[in-house]
Image (cartoon, rainbow, N blue to C red; front, side, top):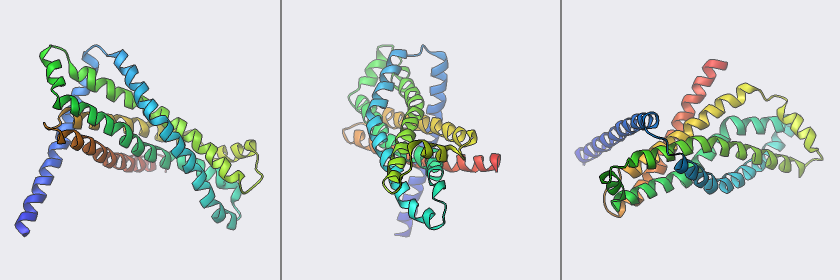
Length: 261
C-alpha cells in the first residue's frame, strides 16, 4: 500500500513537472510566433469580442453584489469603532487592489478558460488542427496567438468594469443604511486612493489574463484523443489557471510590499 502511494505520488509529480515544462515551451513558442509571423488581427478582434461579451455580464453582476455585500458586512464593525466615514475608502481600495482582480480572474478562468480548452481540444480530437497543419497553414498563430493576446488585452478592461459596478454596489449598500450622497461617497472613497494602489493591480490583471489564455490553449491544443479528452482539457484548464492565479497574486503581493513598504 505504501509503495503504491509512493508510485502514485511520483507519477503525479512527474506529470506536474511535465506540464510546467510544456507550458514554458508553449509560452516561448507564443512569443516567437507573435513577433515573427503575420498577426491575425481579424481573429484577434473576434476573440476579444467573444471573450469580453461572454464575461461582461457575469463579472458585472458579481462585482455589484461583491461591493454591496462587503459594505453591508463591514459597516457595523466600523460604525462601532466610530470610523464609518472610512468605509467607502476601505471597500473600494480592497476591491481595486486584491479582491476584484482575483475573484474576476477566477470567473474569467471558469467561463473563458474552460471554453478555450474545450474548443481547441474538440478541434484536436476531430483532427481539424492536423488538417490545418497539413494544408501548410499555421494553426498555432491563428488559434493560440489570437486567443492569448485577446485574453491579455480584454481581462484588464473587464476588471475596470467590475470595479465600476462594485463601486456602485458599495454606494447602494451604504445608502440603504444612511443618507449619504453620491458625491460625498465618491469623495470619501477616493480620499486615500493613490496611483500606487492601482498600478500593481493593473499589472497583475495583465498577467492573469495572459496565463489564463496560455494555460487554456495549452491544455486544449495538446489534448488527448477521444471524447474524454475534451472534458479533461476544459477541467484541467480551469484548475491549472485557478492555481496559477493564486500563485501570481502571492508573488505580486510580496513584490509590492518590498517596493512600497
